[in-house]
Length: 505
Image (cartoon, rainbow, N blue to C red; front, top):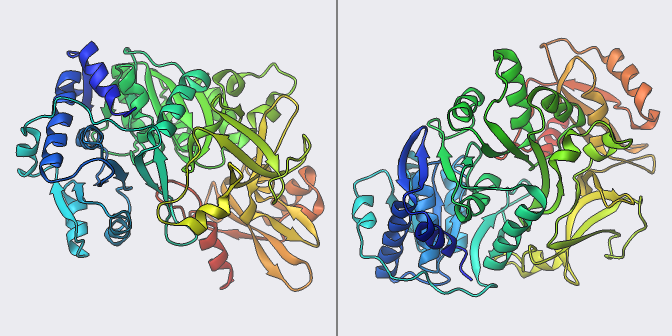
C-alpha cells in the first residue's frame, strides 16, 4: 500500500473540494493537487527516478511542499524532508547521507545549498524551472509499494552528534494515521489543518490524515509560527487543527491573553515534541478551553507511542486529574508500551524505568547505521531513552530523558521534577535544570532561569519555594539567570549547550 494513493482516492471522491491555501486564498483544489503531484511524478520518472530513490525537500511551509511530497510518492520514491531552519551545511550533509537524487527547495533555501557546494540536482519551486515540471506528462497510476518499503527518511535533530536517518515505512505511516483516528482526534472534510510548525516534523507528518479525509491545508503567509496570524486564520476558517510544540502553546497563551484573543476557530491543538509543564497547560486550558490533545512519540515511532485525550487534558473533576494531566497518556492502539530496565525486562507498575514500545508504528532501524539501530532495538522493542513509570490505569508518566538524569550523592534526580516546581513560582518564565560535576557528590543541580522581568531573580525566594515542594537534596545548588534558553529548530532546549556554559561559570 502506497500511502500517497490516499490523495489519488480523495481527488476522485472530491475533485472540486478546496485543498491547499496560502493564507485565505485557495491555490489548489483536490483535482489540481492530484494533477500537480502526477506531473511531478512523471518528471521524476523521466529522470530515471523511481521506487526506493530518495527525494529531498528543503522548503519553508508552502503549498509546493505537499505537491512534491505526493509527487515523489506517486513515483514510488522516498521523501527526505529537511527542516527549513537548518544551516545550508547541515542540510547538505543530510542530502549527501541520504543519497538524494534531486533536491526541491524554495528561494533562499536553494541559494543556501548552492553556497555550500551541494552536489545533487536542485529544483527551485519558486523559479520558472518548476513550471514545466508541473505541466509534465502524468503517469496513470500511483506506483505500487509494499507495506515495509520506505516512504520517509526522517533525520533526528542531532543534539548529541550528527543526525540519524530514521527509516519510516508506508506501514508505519498508515499505522500512525489510523491510530490518530482511534486515539487522538476525528477529522472531516469540514476541518482544516494549519501548518505553523515545520512540515519536516510533527506538523507535516499529520498531513496524510487530512488528505485522506479531504480537509483543507492552510499555509500561513508568514510561513511559520505567528500567534496573531494563527488566531486570524482560525477565525476565518473555523474548525482548525494544528500541531504545536509545548513552547508554541505557551506563546499562544501569552499572546492571546495580551491581545484579548479567545482562540475562536481553533478546534484541536495537538501538542508534543518536548516537556509540557503542568502550569503551562493548565493556563492554556483555562484560557482556550478543551482544544488540547497530547501525543507522545519519537521519530523512531512517529507520533505513535501514547496519547492523552482532549477529555483528560481538560477534566478537573477526576480525583487524579493532576497526575493524569502531568502524564503523556495511554498507549495508542497500534502499539504495546511497557516500562523496563536496561536489559528490556518489564518492571512493576509505579517503578521508574525506560519507556519501551513495539508495534507497527516502530521503525525497522536507522538508515545505513546498523550499530545505532542495534543500540535502540531490543527483541522487537524500541528503547526510547525516556525514563518514566506507568500507573494501574495505563497512564505513562515521563520523568525525563535517561541521559539528563542527575545522580547526586547516590540519589537519582530528574530535572523535569525540579523544573515543574520552579515554573509554579510567579517570577519564573522559563527554566532548565542540568547537572554539573561535583568532587564530593558526583553531580550537583544547577537551574538556568529566564525570569519574567530581567534582573528579578530572588535566589532565596526560589530556594524556599523548592524546599516547600521537593526534597532538600533535589533543590538547585546554584541558580543562573539567562536571557533565553538555547533551543534547536524544533523548540527543544539544548541542555548540552547549557552544560557547556557551566564550564565558564
